Length: 169
Image (cartoon, rainbow, N blue to C red; front, top):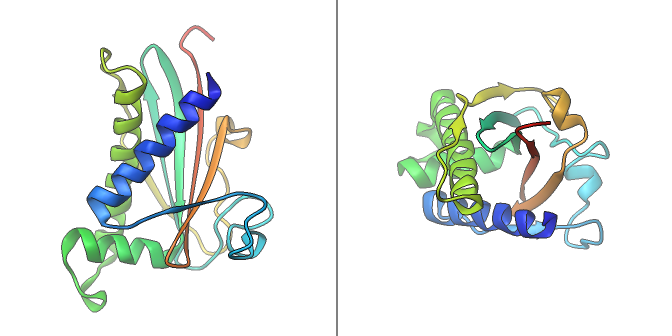
């Protein structure tokens, strides 16, 4: 079941980034030779850089969980440029925050629809954080995520982490 859930999450991530932001993502794994994952993502699994951000969202229904996307600064700029048709010099902090929050909403909305199309899930308001250096996992549930997925696009990084459990736990 975990493999199927992971596949649904990956598909949701790809769909959101391709359709909303016109960006192709390449999955990274521990054997990836294309870039130094430890330098880009960080040995602790967090994205690194002064312009990096994290957005956390919770969901609740027959299952409940928490998800976080961590994005490198360059990726957030590409997202804002592509989604809003802006030049790099026109992008504001609010544009980056709005695009990042919308990405989190769309990823988990898309994922939950794939997970159970017959159920309406509640999504929290996304929490945006900009943090110089490493972005730690925000909630206690994200310290030991069920899924941790890393992607790269044009040399910029995305990390998606998620926990999910039965509502009755």
